[in-house]
Every structure is written in structure tokens, then in C-alpha cells.
Length: 163
Image 1 (cartoon, rainbow, N blue to C red):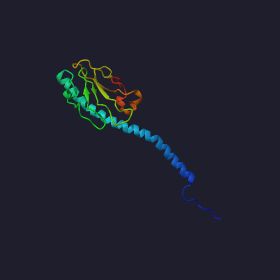
Image 2 (cartoon, helix red, strand yellow):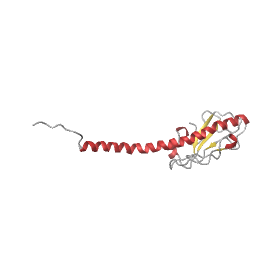
Image 3 (tube, rainbow, N blue to C red):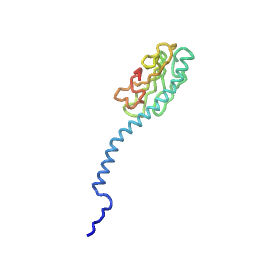
């Protein structure tokens, strides 16, 4: 008798392939969700960073800190899909605070991205006077450390953490 050649896949082979795909999907889905949340928060970070140049210019031109975001040339009322209520600029140290993050993830929503001008390259000393040179900007957040995974790598700290 002639041996018959096997055609197609056996049931067990198909079950193994389905199991492997299931395991890969179970690992990839949470990582993808964190990645998309981080991308949304990065969009907020870009908006806040755009204000950094305006604040720097104001400080250098006027020798004082701006009274608010509007005085620095940033919008205190503009909202985006992922940021509520615009930005704020602290009139005592030039610190820029984003509006509350929203529509991202439970670990990122309601928190802020904070940019602080510093007088050292280690980014750990806040500006005390507008006549001090700006040697760096510290990026941080007020979120708990467990939620830092939702923030850009340069902002995964409390402000003035000195990356």
C-alpha cells in the first residue's frame, strides 16, 4: 500500500498557533495602550514646551517674570483635546504649568506637566531672580510615581528632579 501524504494542518497544530497569537495579543495590548497614552501626554508636553521660548524671551527682554501666561505670549484659555484650560505661568519664578490633562488614561488625567527654568545645568535649582541666567529647564509632573509611565521620559519626575 502506498502511504498517503499529509495535506493541511492537524487540529493540534492550529490550536498551538491560536494559543501563541493569544499570548502575544495579551502582552501587546497593555503595552500599546500605555504607548498611546504616552503619545497623547507628549502632545500636551509639546504645547507647554512651545510656551518655554516665549517665557525665556520675556524674562531676558524685561528682566522680570511675566505676570501670567498671556503676558508671556502663551494662551491661558486655549484648550486642546488632551489639555483643559490652557497654561499658567508663575509670576515669582517663571514656572509653566499645563492645563489639566484629560481624555488620556486614569493615571494621567487631572495631572499637570510643569516646566521650571533653572540656574544650573543639572536642572535642580529654580530661578530665584529674573536676572539670573537660564541654564536649563526642568520638566516634571505632579502625578504619583506609579503613574509616571504615562509621561514622556524627560518628565518622569517631580519638577526640579534634575535629569
